[in-house]
Image 1 (cartoon, rainbow over the protein chains, first blue to last red):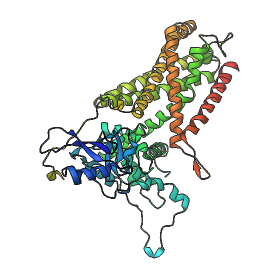
Image 2 (cartoon, each protein chain N blue to C red):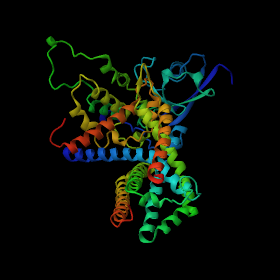
Image 3 (tube, rainbow over the protein chains, first blue to last red):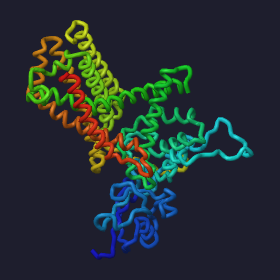
Image 4 (cartoon, chains in turn yellow, cyan, blue):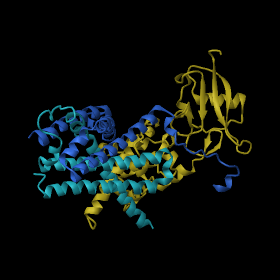
Length: 248
Length: 128
Length: 131
């Protein structure tokens, strides 16, 4: 095998034709600075136009190109070929999601969860614009800024076995985003969000596998967000037990 | 319906909190208890290289009995809770409710029996 | 969205052996199964106490000296220590402390808490046995 060829093994699945998915291998001219997305684009442009996959910004900010590469959830645009052992790289659709075609997964469940946690500032009363902006100190910003880095790439859901076992689990990204708003000093929506994250299939399903934080390309650390949310839930429940009629 | 599920979720939150506390107990208190009962005493090592033995932990003074209760009850709760959850992760997810019921039953019986022994010994003078 | 799905989607179920896929998952399973030994030791200890309650103190002490009990307890101790170490690491992961511009790392919490464990253990022995 020549030094300048990489072999890309891709999952193919065309539901109108195939009963099961299968692997197809393509030989791609290899450059030192290639990422998996470059290889997929080459395949689609030069070898097999039917290969179907999602991508957009090609620089790790849009969150479209998630896939399982050699078994690990990664962004195809951020995975350099030279980082993988050997010259054959296996590209599969992200685990734990239903597959629509080839590498394209169904995101409906995730989208529903994203909307469910109400990812916007909730105020009890909006102050009119004439009164000026909501001020926030640097310390207040720091409490939630890492959790606002999420690009909704869903790699954390692909990595989470709990989500794989139980689709009802709220999951890492949705909880991290909910926590981002809970911790935002401008937000007053705890009463709205707490019941959602603290319901039975909310944060409680998490058993600290921790893979979500390992695969996150943006350093969001959803595991941390989930644990903090659990602690908030436990202290909240204790408070309402000890002070049923007051004390908020 | 929402109110009911909310109550269950709140209960679960508290049960999780106790589980966390049990984890602290199992991490900080269980090692020394196992050391005393399975290494120090059977092999006559410190602190049981003299006349004392682990029963002294129970009868020596109330603090010892409390230590035993907290350590064993906390560890039992944490262990069963987590093991039941681990079982749901190796293919038994559909038996989850049954596993929880059995788990909490074992925890309940274990803690009641343990408490019963210690309290009886306290009241009949065995624990000073 | 339902009307778009003219063809079936492929839904794969996660198999019970999912955790064998990589080292991280396998280590996670080991960590979770330490709980079995923690629970079993507690139950066996309660059983030992019941021998005392229904019999005599000597029954409890002989139970503790039983080679099978000692053997199991030593295995339980290994797993309990693994639980403690991973628990301390997780504590560090979920409560990073800001010191100046940097944050504490989980392994620092592990070391700190292991030292604390030694101190607490010594205190327990001193307070409960030696005093």
